[in-house]
Length: 311
Ligand SMILES: [Ca+2]
Ligand SMILES: [Ca+2]
Image 1 (tube, helix red, strand yellow):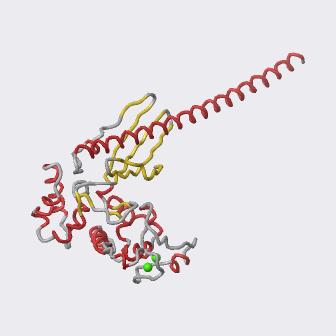
Image 2 (cartoon, helix red, strand yellow):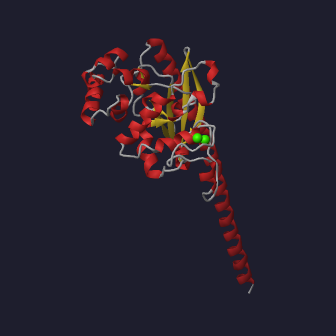
Image 3 (cartoon, protein in one colour):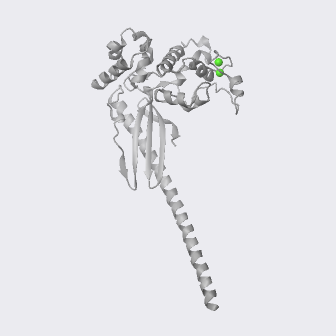
């Protein structure tokens, strides 16, 4: 009997030890995860700082931005202690800024004499929708989403009354987009539509931001004329541009593919960029972390103006 009691106590002791060690292991793992997470975050901030220094150096070397430059060729990533790090920079002016569509005359009193430039961007956006085989009338819903009024532009437009009848109800933003994913809330835009548009659009915190002809994908170059360029024509523009390491604005406008389209294209384009996205991702142990940092570069400085964690 005594032996049985001893055995019984032993079994309890062993299972307690086992339970304790499990708990300790779990705690140790949590500590390790926390340490990895804070280490990963520091690494991402370092990556961002490196991206900024590359962009500043680039602005000191030339006034032109094209895909042959160092910022676009940062390599495959680096091995770091217990993990890896990838850094890439994307020119956000290789995209059409949705906030260009917001008419300044609707927010700034007309007597300030500022020439409204939003119309040419709305037309460009409509051409982008057409080139992607989407309904060009979707631009009316975007304009209503941006404009400060409650007047619906057309049957394709929508304001508070339309959005309040949704489940759950919400209102039109009536201000600039802070992210292109906001489009999912706009009438007529579903996930598939937004996915189609996503590689070609941006939400930048300024208006009348021109498209960089040296970084825009062929699909966006298609919309720079009054008539859509064919896929082959826009690919010609891209292959000639990589041979030449980028165009000057004049060279681009004089390209055979742009014949007759100069007047429409000229106010939409540039060959230097102010907005970039530094994309950083790291893996430390089992911890993976990614951030995208939106950077504005001007007067020889580059500043982070937004950080978006990427899931
Ligand atoms: Ca409206
Ligand atoms: Ca509105």
